[in-house]
Image (cartoon, rainbow, N blue to C red; front, side, top):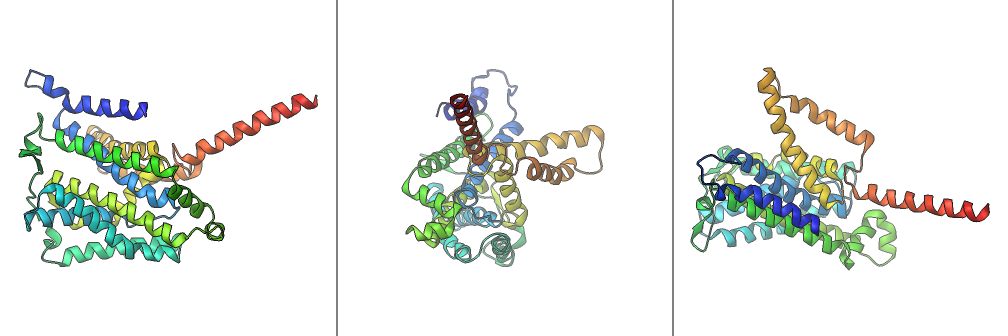
Length: 341
């Protein structure tokens, strides 16, 4: 809890320190604040994906479909129907959750690589539906989305760069999802998730309905991804079919894997790491005049290294658990030997 409060204070200090600066120079440029927003919004999406990959043990490669769907729903409701951002924001999450019900149905009968293929296919179907519909703007998408406002105050008019309100909303969304996950972990539903993840047959024998809890995990995951998608497209003032593509899904899943499956701090770490690294390597490309993006090479290398040395992720829950077990076994072994000798 203290670490979460400290993390939030650092983010807020970086966000608003320019408001105290009396000189026209930025202490943290609009570019830095843009990267900070991207880190936080991807943290929220990574946490939402951990509901499926971490809690229930199902690997989904179509998570961007919920993210992009939330963005399209929010864009259409605010732009065409004239709804306020707050109502459209909630509607984006609800519609994504309702769509998650039929998409989660294949997870009831299949798992492993077959589920990856099915979820990948679902994401691609959403993308090509968006490309071929007039209401979604076709391949060009929907530009010129309205900036959200609260009590008559426009987000773009708040703060020194117009990004501060978006950063605060992304931070609140990520913290809310993290708090929800932490409370869920020790609840009856969280224990049922763990039982289904560890042994589906044994969980069924204990009276737990695996199909129900798998669908529930998909619905939670889709709801939070839809909320993040809504905030993301209004920040960019633009939504396109690329938000629904498989590249986005692969990036989100990689953040979960690198940061740590079933780990809330790991979700933040993975999102920040895989958002900051490409930006840092882009400078190296300009400095050394490279004809290719070094991140495209290191991305695959990073995945191979992670799978070889830490498949559970940097802050994966299994690592801590195993370390605790090993430490406990070691102490027990030492105590037993002392008694024997």
